[in-house]
Image 1 (cartoon, one colour):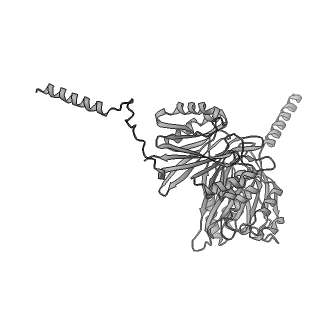
Image 2 (tube, one colour):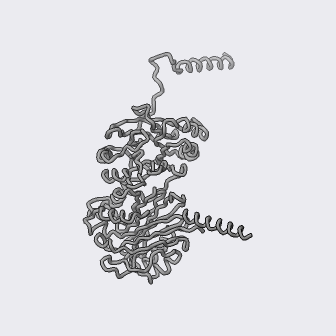
Image 3 (cartoon, one colour):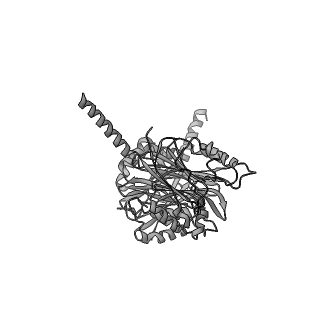
Length: 259
Length: 260
């Protein structure tokens, strides 16, 4: 009987161990690239070098230009993806300077789906229309479909941002395990975060992310869905990015647990 | 003359008229039925850039020539066939590199995965796609369906699907059947050895009179891969032009008309 107990316990340990080793870890880096690289002459190379240092599975980007006058009619997203050998998707928020302005996602894995959707708020208060972009990928080890989303909310009022978050929740849905990152332009106490994002698991902490030179405001976030299914292996606010952009980057490694 | 006599006379007249209108196959002066006139304003141009060897021909030294070609040539769709993405270090995405120089946006469509690379094609478009979803054929093989504006007011759906494994063909039959039924033009590359499997997959789900499968007649008839075009009878395959791009890379330009 004693031996049987040992055998059962050992078997349980082995099952648990093999289950954990198969669970997927995902590394995500978020960056607001400040007017598509305005601080570095609109070059993608400093961003490529920064990303390579951390080797993330996904990179979520805000303030990205597509073929605008100010960035010399460059496709920032594709250039950056080409430099680091990733797949990419760009989501337009608005037409800008003969080109487009919005958000982007870079992925190590082939992209199964791209969906970009405009989000708005009260016309009287809203400064600019914004967008939420998501991609779906198949994680190669577990074959789990993952959704990676990015947004950059308006810098007007909490009311506008709350309206945008409500739309965002409907767009991103809950069909697949999801990581959402971006510049929410909202402090942790605002209702856009406390109420609007209450169905999400907070992946980031409350350390300030802006300005990168001397961070004093927390306005950039990473969230996960379903709530409670993500184990946070690490999270860092990276100030070393201050030479190339005005927001701190955020880096996290998370693991999706089975239900 | 009675009524029966009138009928006989009428039958005789009809028989003589019938014999006059019948083509005599032995008569060289008789013209065959005219082909419907090729309406180029209803024709979609699809360009495959490939060496049809099954290997990735897009090496660093070819990027600028391929990009210049894409910038200068006129085509509704450019496909960089086997622009494989290396996922082992150092990562390399040739389709993205070429797209940057050609001022295009790349979209990767996987066919298979190996220990160090994603095998597949890159579809180039002028603007970033805001909505897109690949359709699974097998675990690693995907089909992309895209809307092509042939001319203002005439847009058609075109699908690209390439195959390098026999089981992909078995699994694709329902999907390809559905494409034909929706009059979606399908094109892609396929290992030449697997053409019989493709024909068999199609014939098991579709009546032969409802579709047309054409294999583009590229100059190297022994190439490991070839380009196929599958469409319903609403489409007519019109022409293929083969143009040298750089080294072994050629552009196979297919012209397929959407009939009125």
